[in-house]
Each structure stands twice: as structure tokens, then as C-alpha cells.
Length: 335
Ligand code: AHG
Ligand code: MN
Ligand code: MN
Ligand code: MN
Figure 1 (cartoon, rainbow, N blue to C red):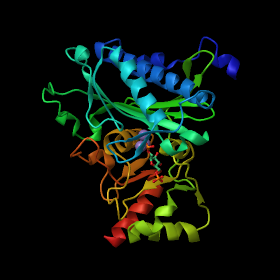
Figure 2: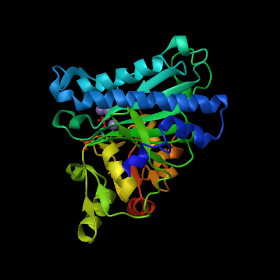
Figure 3: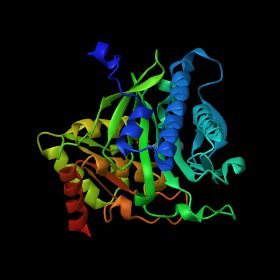
Figure 4: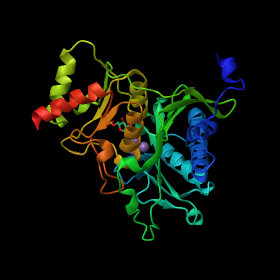
């Protein structure tokens, strides 16, 4: 019960990271500090979101268009800046790359010792901001390779297996942080009165199959015939249920817990779909694979995709093993 969760056995996030690594080596200390910083960003964003409707000038659009061609929300900018200011003080991160910044943000004063890069989606589900629906943040940490003197961040254009940690924060009725450092997937719930993320569930495993399919069916006639065939199959087969919230973090969290599949396939206008590889698909693929699920583009594992550019998109099919395999079989049949 909650009483014991607050007792001496309650595990905070930073303690959990150190326990997982079973060491006090420099790398373990770094990872623990990095995760604590991500948690701090999550707390700041969570607090801001919970009061958003009470303050002037927090909701709505900025009037700018980001590198993705999307209209930017004020909350996208706020959350983007929270991560920057939190990591400026960390000493550990030399670069941050996000959905909302065309080029990585460099923190030169950290660079001689800051050996890590943070990749992040500051607000996932931006269309949910002004209607009080769930939102998320997605993050991944990679080791910085080389000096990146030209500011091109070419070392980031590598496989998902280069991620040393990944996860998301879900701002729902409560704020939940889910992370992996390659040793299983663990979830924490923010206790706002303590300001601490407390361990909720360790070693989460996705069910092999689930009843949920999560996709924007408004794009039906924009998809490839193989995806339409899969959806037709789902429609005429008993036991499926549709869930799509507009924030992938929320939809994938449901699937992580209950099983099922989330799809964002390519469309006629956007053959690569919408979801960005380095700070959306790859971190979520890392997590879902750690939890016994799968993530593919349709023809390739997400973790095997070598990015060609920072903001590269990929089609994404992610979730329970059997459900992803079923979608894959439709794609292969039409190949
Ligand atoms: P973001 O808000 O970070 O740009 O990402 C939104 C993503 C994802 O969270 C969501 O599932 C999907 O885009 C919604 O897109 P559609 O409105 O095209 O379905
Ligand atoms: Mn997103
Ligand atoms: Mn976003
Ligand atoms: Mn966006």
C-alpha cells in the first residue's frame, strides 16, 4: 500500500539507477546524474502543465513553424528550454538535439568533460496541449563520439543500439517516468508532494499479443494497400479495440502495459510517415524491445536503421511481438 511506498523501502529513481548498475564507477555516477536531471525536467514540465490553464500566455501557438513544418506551441518551446537549462547545469551534456531545434544546441562550457548528448522530444502530442489531454516527453542519451568541431553532429547518425539510456515521461492524471539503461524497463510515478519519482513497476514485460490497435485511421486512403488490408482484417476479426489519443507516448504506454500495436505508417504525402527516428522511434524501440516487444519500419527493425540526418523520419510499427509480426506479414504479402 501507499504507506509502505513511503516507508524506508521506497526506491527513488536515482537510487534505482545505481542499484541497476551495481557500481559506483564514474559511468554509473554519470548515468545516475543524467537520469536525475531528466527527472528534474519532468517535474518542472509536469508542474507547468498542471497549472497551464491558470496562467496567461502558456497555451496556444507561438506563430512560428519548426524544422518539421509544424506550427509551434508555446508549451513546445517551454519544455524545450527546460531541458536546455536543466542540462546546462549538469556538466555532463555537451549537446542537446530536439524536435524543436534545427541544429543541436551546444553547451561549450560542458564540452571538455561533458561526454553525452541528449536527444529529446520535449512535448509529444502537441495537439493535446490546449484540451487537457495526456502529453509526453521522450528522451535518449548517447555517448558523444569525437569532438564534433564542425557542429554537424555526424556521430549521432548511428544505430539505436548506440543509445545508453532511453525512456519517456507521461503527463497524465499522474506523471510517470519509464526508462531503460539496457537492463529491463522500469516505471516510476511522481509523488508531487515529495517531488520524487517512486518506483512503481520493475522489469515490465509486454504481453505477447494485445487487443489494442492504435493508428490514425483518418489517413486510411493515404496508406499503402498492405496497411489498409491489415486494418480491414482487424475490422472483421473479433477481439480488437481501437485506441488513439494524439500522443504516442500515452498510446505506447497503454501498449507497454496491456499489449497491442501502435502504427504510424508512411502516407502518400509523407512516405516516411511522421515519427522521427532519433528522438521518437529509436528511444521507444529501445524500450519496447527491452520489454520483450518489437519495433519495425515495416521492412526493417527500427534499431537497425542508420539515420542519414538528424530529423529523419521512419514509418513505425511498435508493440507486442505477435501483433507487429501480423502487420509485417501483410506488408510482406504486398511487397
Ligand atoms: P509531436 O507532438 O511531438 O510532434 O508528435 C506527435 C506525434 C505522436 O505523438 C502522435 O501519435 C502523432 O504525432 C499524431 O499525429 P497525427 O495527428 O498525424 O495522427
Ligand atoms: Mn512526438
Ligand atoms: Mn514534440
Ligand atoms: Mn511536433
